[in-house]
Image (cartoon, rainbow, N blue to C red):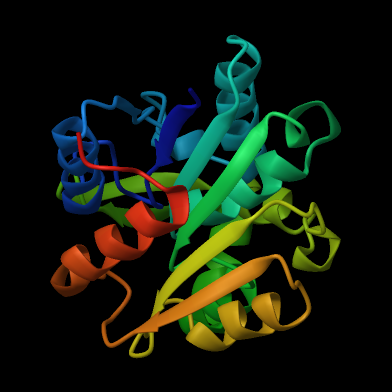
Length: 217
């Protein structure tokens, strides 16, 4: 039996509504869903690379195959973890909820040149953390690290389900459409929702349960 890992989104935590709803659904089937805290107690020094290292260590620490479920930046992290040579053969399937493909190209322009220059110069930017419900400083290394990753390099042929809202104003569904269009092993399901996907939780579970072939017990 595979282990199931859920990777929460940016400025979020294992306590997020989506994470806990998914954990409850798995528990109803007698299955454990592990939700690591990707903040690691130090949100300020968060990077995509650090998240990948943390998740990779969890996968390599046990012998069973892994199903990775990721939301937003957690979805992008899941895709990159699965791309790593020592990890790919251990990943059974991917479920990506509004994955943050092309996220720098979408996020940085919203900050504007002045704020971006300030971040680069001062090396820290206050970012609202949804679980902490307050602004926390994020080091500019978050950007420079992410710039080292190109979505074009994600080509591991792992069965993948993407669930993305057509009204997503944070990560455009066009990013997922472009990703799925050139990868025949990817199934994209478009939902009438926004980035949070809170109002389509039942739909998310239905598609996830079918894709992962999780039978009620």
